[in-house]
Structure formats: structure tokens, C-alpha cells
Length: 214
Ligand code: MG
Image (cartoon, rainbow, N blue to C red; front, top):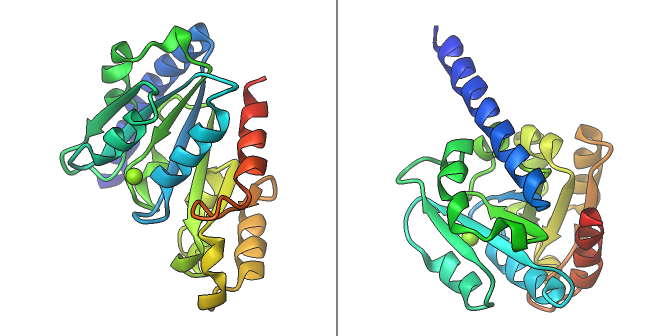
């Protein structure tokens, strides 16, 4: 019985996600659903990515958090259009939440919209929001067991950004295992290694993202 209810929720969400997707297509905006655990560095990667791409394209952002507007304020400081969604407890963004804020963004002026999901390695991967692609950030401090423990997120993502590589000398993280397990789940996954602190790898990552739009 419970399974049926969940299925219906996901079906309703998929229909609305498809409506969002058409709206994004009409506006000519490429949409990225950015996922990852709390503290992985999603907002900081977003800041570095915007700094790298701002001279080349117009980026807008939707920030998803359970409460608060700290992340939207950080992104707003970079002078790009940003809307904060507070889910009020829900552990993910869904298509309806995105639909409700689209009028607040200048969609037709944007080349790319990046949606930072609520920090969580589970349910954000289950709910489409109308995106062109999903991606995830995994900090090397989270350990090398995450791909096998949270496989759906790795399967659903087109890109995996391994963040905080400047911390590797202090960690026992087996990066080869992270890569091998991730690619076993998703052979098409593009993997990038970056440090948002030292900015290592940011240009390579940002260039790849930029080319998705063209
Ligand atoms: Mg954040």
C-alpha cells in the first residue's frame, strides 16, 4: 500500500517536472540540478563556478534549504539572479517547489539555471525538477564508501565533482576506490577533482559545464 502512494507522488512529480522542462526549453535555459551532502561544498563550488563563467554566460540560481537564506545571500553577492526556497522540513526540492518560483527569475535572459538542492545523499536523486542534468559534489572528507552506500545519486548524476582535494594529505580516502565504484555504478559519469579553496581544477570543471550549453 505504501509503495503505491509513493509511486503516485513520483508520477505527479514527473508530470510537473516535464512542464518545468518545457518552460526551460522555451526560454532557452540549460538547467542543472546540483546535489550533495551537507558540507560537501555545493554552495562554494557554485560560487567558484559562477566566478569562472560569469564573463561568458548568464547564470541564475535557485537555492534549496530547509530553513534560512544564507546561501542565497552568498550567491546574491556575486550579482546573479537568485531565489531561495525553504522546504520547511522536506529533505529535497520537488518539481512543484521549483514551478512556484519560476516567475521570480528572468528565465529568458539566462543561459544556465543552477538549482542547489537540499543537502542530502538520498531523496534529491529521486525527484526530477525539470533539469537537463543532475550532478553531485562529494567532498574527499566524506570517505570512499559513499558510492556503494548511496548508489542512486551516483547513477542519476552526469557529473561527479570530488571537492576538497587539498585535504587529501590528511585523509585516508582511497580516491581510486571512489572512482572505480562510481564508474561501476555509472560508466558515463564525468569525474572532476577540485579544491574550491585553492581553486585547483575549477577552470577545467567550469569549461566542461559551459560547453554543455552550446
Ligand atoms: Mg549550500
